[in-house]
Length: 280
Image 1: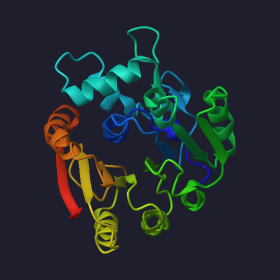
Image 2: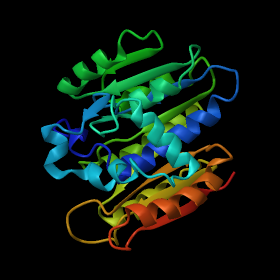
Image 3: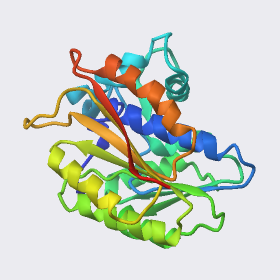
């Protein structure tokens, strides 16, 4: 797990979906005047250089943010996401990509808080530097899956938890269900956004069944695929499972996901899913 570097994958199609859902959820939550707490269990270094060796090795961003960068026909939610990414690029050329911590930082108000967990010894140094002594941000060198539960419920009693491990080891799948259930037990009214990759569909089906049987209510799934499921190596799709989603999110995703599937899909193979895993 500690060998994982998201820099190889920054700005890919999975990041596009994850960050659109994250932005739309936070935009909704910050409409109310009351403060909130946001927790990121696997924060990474904070930002990524798309002209660096890691990102250029596989150029996954070419089939993600790069395809959206210069388009003038973006749906509203996608345009909002691209505009935030553009803040981190000094010119019209795409060279940098913000991770979840820096995107969230842009959306927080003075009254809000952000807690970032990162276990990788190199990434935590970069992340700490990116926090820039922002009093709203706490950076913790620890495993977010096991440690973030202790922060719940937050004093604000309002918040969003982003859970996005690498899933490099199979134990991550059952562990995220256990963690999500433990978090929900302590803070049932919070919004939880769980990212997942589709590499072997059977694992995802097991994950969905486990969440559906967990007793957690009000759970929506949003999935974006760029090619059909395959036994070959590599991620064919990814998704976000959202507990207590903003009531506007399903309608927004019904507009955005078909468009993204068409634009980012590989030779017409793009697809999407919107599914209720548990009702209210």
